[in-house]
Image (cartoon, rainbow, N blue to C red):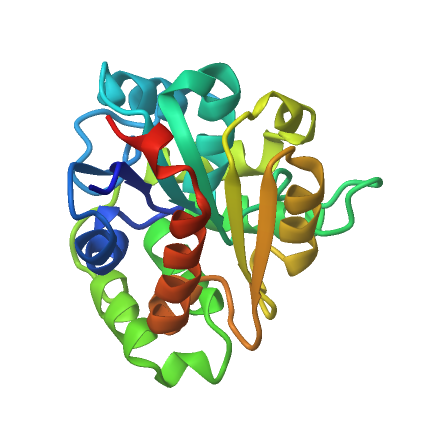
Length: 256
């Protein structure tokens, strides 16, 4: 029997990005959550930093688990902080397109420039819908834009006429900018799989390598030619990597 799974999406999308993977991986209990202010979440991203999302995640898991928790991008960052606070809640982590530090620092070159992030923040402040329309294609390489996974993603999130929670998108983007989790990595006890596209233009692959080196029980799987969302554009390869990781875990220890 597979352990309980938990899935967290990235910035400015929702739990639907994980629907296919959740169906294939989670043959038992699973939680596929919407971050605050995203999707069908009942609460907004109402405070600075990662706290609203971490609080919502830990509240949603309740007495369940421990979970194999799979997070993409912002969702992976939320998982790192949650696992550092409450190690017993997590049997294993899978961090996809993740970075402990989204914005480049003097001692962390594998992030986006501060000027670019400031421009993103200004764009979201002025016109959230237009800013997101520009952002979504950046999750894919030029070649990947023709893939079925990229097309499905873009059909879900671009050209939408409904009103997004622009304030939550802005708060979550600011959390990405300000949250530096490098010092939190030592507190993460769960075995961790870091999956990163070698051509990721949102969170450079160096950030994934940094995570794999600094987390105590981590392994890295780089997917050549893939961008920021390899689980969408390279689903077969992603599943093979996931299943290999799960087979190597102590499954007895992961049972509920």
